[in-house]
Length: 253
Image 1 (tube, rainbow, N blue to C red):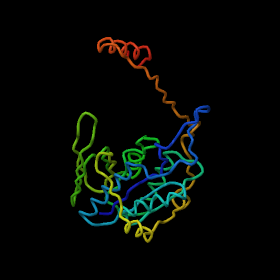
Image 2: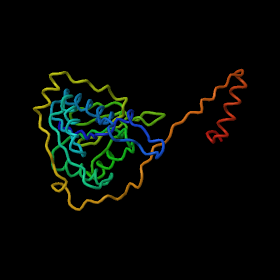
Image 3: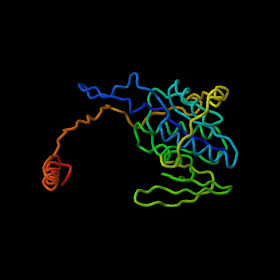
Image 4: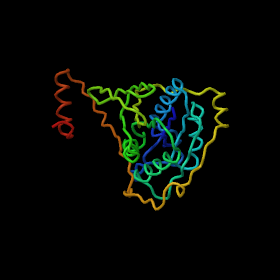
């Protein structure tokens, strides 16, 4: 199996704070990491490789320091990394186009694995966009995967029910966080990752004249303030007061 894992470097949202005066998120000094669900995609790729053999390539569009994050996935079990630097302006259209052209340049592949969404923006756009641009089948929200020689079957989390979907190769699959528990590489694997290649591919070598379709005008944080109201009356009276308060806040209608 030739497997491509698309991964994204993101800020650790659990460490991010919001400036109370400007409502802007404070990004300077916030640690960077591979998006959590992309690590689930990586873990699933390793399981498929362990079963069928093959090669895992990690593909990232990101800043130069994303190489350090790619090394984490190489330590987990990927064989090779490819980094495409962010252009000056980009959006989902630009990123998905760059990933598509890079995948075409890689050549033969059987499976493309992505997280269902990145933990910073959680739009869930990249996987479906890639499948559309490449003209291949897609299986989204996979919570379990069974890769066989000539087909792959996945159970999809559709909220209130699960749907079993089957596809031939090549196929793109987006996975949920529930699919597995990503492994922690050993010290020897971490050291060994330094010997695995990370290739730099320029934007110009993949696509010319790429322009974003959307301009980000502003980025604001949402203040999460608690009123800390405690109801101490009897249960029936407390429930009534709670419902009345929620209705006044517009939570209940």
